[in-house]
Length: 180
Image (cartoon, rainbow, N blue to C red; front, side):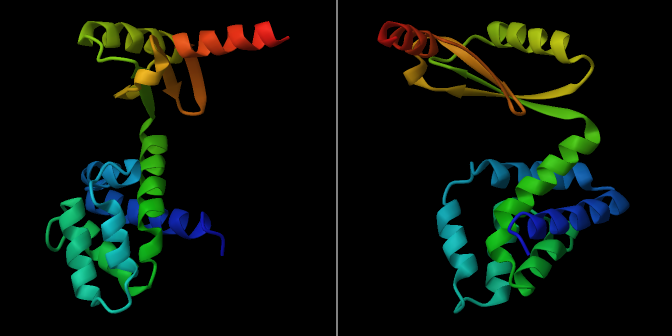
């Protein structure tokens, strides 16, 4: 099986179970940080999960603590199942697939606004409003990222579409024009 197929199947199964149990949104919120890789020590957790000498129960405890899953919850049972089936190496990809599936089913678009420095909230709101005007009635999850290499301006990424209005991009264009 391909790497993408296994996580997608597990994510679909988890989503179906979560919808039946009524906790799809809660699981979504718990898996979002794993998918983004924003959990500190994720590499250490991965080493623990792939270590054959560590007991399944201990691996399960690590995953439950990391996600914040409640004891006896659908997510806890799912994580233990994944570990029992020796699929721990796919947990991040499963989380990514679940988050993607949830967003797809609920009409949520993820927007990454990257700037050179922290912008005031009112400017972020203006950018978000422009995106809403363009995309219509859709729920947006906005992440503001800081990248000093942009020098100035901003980039906006919505799904696979990137709008680059940064000074760095303009300088690169000028450099390419001068080289021609």
